[in-house]
Image (cartoon, rainbow over the protein chains, first blue to last red):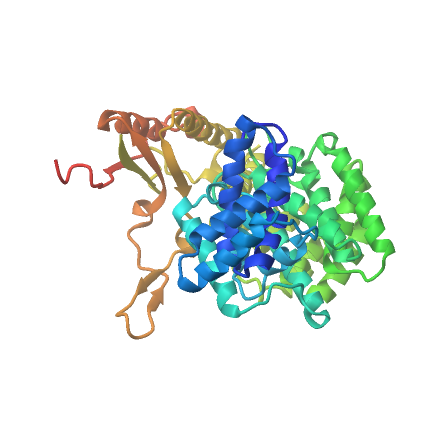
Length: 406
Length: 133
């Protein structure tokens, strides 16, 4: 957005706060969100040239309000405009409250599809431009603009009031927020589409958003769990790909490349969250990531503990992908045959899923049955939609074949 | 500048051996070649987008009359070798340049480092530029 150091961070930090003020003042989330974007662009243009205003937040609120007033064309709006213009003339007081949390709940509202909620959250809370979001998701800017616009229409149509959720659906609404942040992180980390394994921007964005969420919800153990999970996972990023961009599995990563600072921070946040009680699924996933992070060498991994945690996670979520991971842990504790037996039970739910084939191939390889492993690596390679993963699985099969030839 | 779609199908050129039967370092050389070429086209500002497609295992054919439920089947597709495997959209100065890029794609190394000579389709994208002078 700008070349001035620190300016972009400041603008992005202020974006959701300014939006909160404008929505409270004008009541129109859709128009207010557009106005904030325009105010941010104006600031990015003017401030480097003309110097930072004394009160940047106040400047943005004033500018955003003016943009909003410009947009209001109807008779009714004109009457309101005059009233508000009068109030602006009299000093335009800047409220102190920070509505970022309320904005976050709006953006991750369950009435929105995940794709819309993700886009809206990145714009309204993350302060990213539509063009930046579009490029992160490899879609044209016009497509992303439409997705954001429709998300806002939907919020308007659903009649959600601009306030924090009631106690009755608080837990569920927090879950929605965490789910959206988790999806953004995953999109950056696993990169389900396109060629690159890592789109650094999206995982970094998700971590930034999770930090904001933790600041706003300091007593929620799952918010902390999610942030810890992201940090502990992201710490492995430097070791996750080779020089040619190829995927390197956890067991073969050079652990000296792991980011120790991120691991330490993740462990601290997790310990703090666990001490607060009420263990949730993100804390459990973070605890598993922490056990990997604590193992200096792959053979130091505490697999019995990981197996136990996956067991808890499986009971809590009923997610078959969790069961698949549990089967891997079972194989590491009780041997590959035990893991393969566990996979039988997943045949129904995960039939044709490339992950099931990949895990089966891996366990056959462990069991010393390269021919079966090759067959399942090939099946997995044919069905994955991730290009780096396809390369990895194909190479794995080729390595086993080459070894068999010698 | 003119856009061209460069298409790659599952026709392996001079080599019929599936990639899982290549030497691992041959696979790596193959991937590195594509990566270097794509970096070059990104740096030159000619690459618009590139995508590899999932294979026939995940492909569907949909037929609909717009009123009743659509008919969704797993085929039939053209012969496997003729099925689209991926494409690159490039924005280039001339058809000569599009052909030059296609030739580089075609010469991707296979087993033994020998160029595969994979057939690359070169299709000019229609636009509005020539319609009214």
